[in-house]
Image: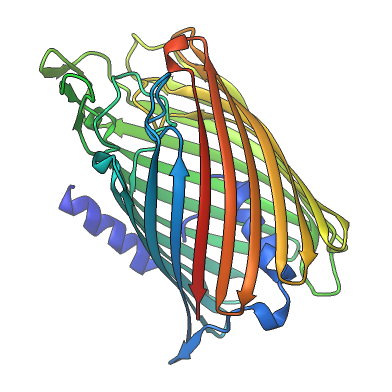
Length: 428
């Protein structure tokens, strides 16, 4: 990784937290009622306090059965796995300034398929620094190293192991408040690198590093608050974004032992707007739509235009029952298809508080991958069942079942997967 780039990212952070990939996710963190607030106080972990910081350590131990670890058609790749995930959340408040952080690691080991063993890391620091009552500076720095998902479509052969993807991200912004109106300017930079591998059958090189790239982006964001509730928080917010992104790939396609072919470099411009509402603590809706245009530098690649959508609705139909609906439409370029694919879908979920320490949940969804530049389409079906039991304020037990099925126009890519998970989570 370029040391100058790392230095530049660090300077961004120390000068002044990344906004989420889109407005909706960032706004949800601010305004959606956290699921954890429904937990009775005596079952919530207190955390540890020292020198003005609040620390919340967790240890998650999960055993799982996966009927198709590699996501292959008509092959028995079932196996058992054990993962250990230590995590640490921290928060610091000083006057109007806020700093929070997270560090988590996962050590995942399989009983038979040693090549599938994983070591994953995720960490971030986020800060919100108030200059005065009108001006504030958000800042963010994060690092992640994650194994490639076996459910992610690939244009190359199946690799022997899920190679890692590393992402270093830093962002810096400034916000000006005008009573109900606020205007923000955000800049962000990502450095994304991929590990190469070898084919499961035959051992031929598989080059994922073609996807190594630096992404520079900026956004101009406006928000307007309509009403404030008794707690002083806005109940209705309208937002509008203008976005620009420049993706610069380090290499081109790997062909016949050398790097050649088409360049994936592109520039992306888009608009995105919508509204949020939080009504009497029982309804949360965050709905936005927009338009994105992707302009590839290489004349051999066709430019792409797309209507985008992101919708999140949560409604408490009874004091103990919550219904949710999510929908999205976006361009996904986190894969080795040079133009990526159009990624859209929706999901419907319900969760129920059966007892003060027992929560049940179910969710079902559908997704469509529409590949740009070829005729392939993938239909993806998902369903989840969850049980969450709070043994005490320091211990939780989770039981889950997941089902995934892919029907592709390329029939060789069809497969399904059943996963059963049992987790013990310790908290302080």
